Length: 159
Image (cartoon, rainbow, N blue to C red; front, top):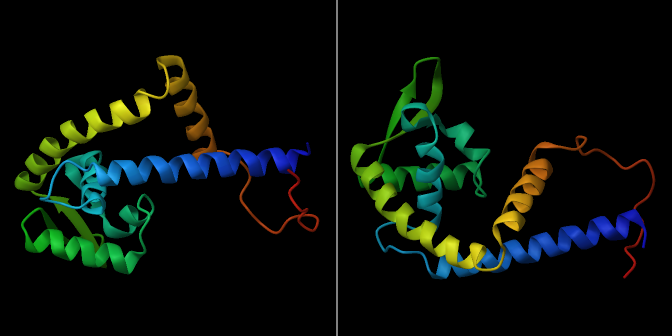
């Protein structure tokens, strides 16, 4: 098998596993108070200093477009889960800050959601495999050369 075929096969396996797991986690999401995508915003804010981030920085971590994130943040702000603040360093920028009520909701949801993840992901892989998967996914996320035009025409994947 060529290196291209192996890489394409690995990508397909990773992608299909991600789709399958995400569908199950979405179906089992533990609350009707927030959606899975709203939780993802809170999850990302929870790891930021003072639980706040510029909206453009959130965009880098979410699988939504910037306009979709803006609408989602507006809905969260209307419910008092986050606040939208002007960025003092850039008058055009918006900072999204999790409120105390938002943090309480996040924590309640996170405990139950983590248990679901543990059953689905941890139930399929042992400790060493989970550690290896984490390392491999981190390398994929951080590594590699920037994508650009290939040096040669793409080859047809072989099975």
